[in-house]
Each structure stands twice: as C-alpha cells, then as structure tokens.
Image (cartoon, rainbow, N blue to C red; front, top):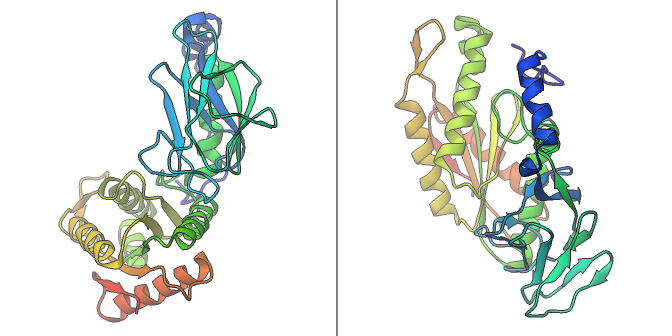
Length: 310
C-alpha cells in the first residue's frame, strides 16, 4: 500500500450491498434531517439532527463546535419536531446573530420553523437544511472523509490540520486564551522501512496516528503534515499541560511494541516539540516554526523525548 494513495481506492461493487442501499433509499424511516455545510470547513459535511437537539457554538461542549471569533460560546440550537415534519431553530442570545435565508432572526422564546432547502448562517459557516436518505448521507460522509482525512492514518490531512491551526490561533489571540502545539515524528522511521519493509512503515504510521487520537481530547485536532510528522492543536492548554500530555503520549508509544502482520514485534519511539502561543506569534505558521525548532532540539538530545520551545 502506498503511503498516500490519491484518491483512496474504491471498494469493489457488491450486488448484495447495492440492494440493501437501494432499499434504504426507498424506506421513509431511513430519511433523516441534516445540515449540509456549504460554506466553511469541512465543506459538504452532513450533520445529523434529532429530537434531542444540536447546540451550536464556539465551546467544545457544543454538539457542533465552530471555532471562530464571530461565533458565540453558545450560539444556536436546532432540533427536529416530534412529528419529524420540520426543524426548530433558536438563537441562544448570540452576539452576531443567526441568519435564515439571508435575514437575521430575532431572539425569541418560540422556535423558528425550518424546512428543506432553507439556508442557516452562523458566523462564517452556511448550512442548507436537507431531508436525506441513508445513501445520500453515506455519500456526503465518504466525500468529506476523502477530502479532509489522511487515507492511511485516519487523522486530518495536511490542508485540514493547517486550516484548523490558523482558526484556533485566531480565536486564542482574540480572546487571549492559551493554546499549545505538539509536533511529533517517529524516530529513525527510515530504518523501520529499510529493515522491515514499507508495509511495516505503514503499520507504524497507522499506530502512531491512532494512538494520538486516543490519548488526546476529542476537541484537539490531530493531523499528518507529511511523512512521519504529525501535528496536534491543543486549545485552552498552557505549555505545562501540553508537556504533560506529550510526555504521556511519548511514554505510551515507547512502552507498547508494535506487532507486525507477520507476527514480529518492534519498538517504535517518537520525539515531540511543544510550543505555546505567544504575543509575538503573528500567525499559526510562526507558532508551528517554534514547535519545529523544539522538535529538532528533541532529536539533537538523543530522540525519544519531549522538548518545549523557549
């Protein structure tokens, strides 16, 4: 398997699966209300709505978290009506408002009623209300995965994680909140490829990305910049907590042997550079550059260690 197939291979056509999918298209119970993101990232994402409700806002606790300055901490709420005939929308007292079909909604106790094809705008994001069958939802899910995720590791691809970095830096600077980065790569990764083969290298990258996702918070974006280099963005995290998280990850990786497909076990380690956003960081790029210097410092000091940027 190549490290970065473009585009990812499509699964073979299966008549049995096709029949099940065809049935889902015709089954009214399989239809669901969703928001499709037309402006903002990831574009094309279909976000399911339910009677339990979906809150939208800047805080990570929201079901739909939009990390940008124009969005309030708790901005809006949507929920499907009990009879599933329409969608209810409330502005939760946001600063910059909720827009429906180009018009700002008043803040009211009673909900605003949405129907299919209505357009809702929150901050710099615009969503179209859709009533989709299961096949349509799967299509949107697959398209978003192919355009935003690294096909080998399942973490964000380079373009997506760098966009996330800039968004979080802008937000942290505006609200004067802490933000840290972890920049990590595998130690002597070329030796793994040369000694055990490229499939073993792929397995190491898959394990590395998977462990990063599991050890960090769900609100911490993780992406692969290229090769064996990965970036994690830690909002609301000062450098001491970021160092603790990095050390916990480094130790966890070093203590777990990777079992290859042929049964052999190898130990892999990583080096991590940590940097916290400072006033002199004009953009995400300057913060990333400081994390990169710290990463090289970890390599120079013998690898398998964590180093903080000054």
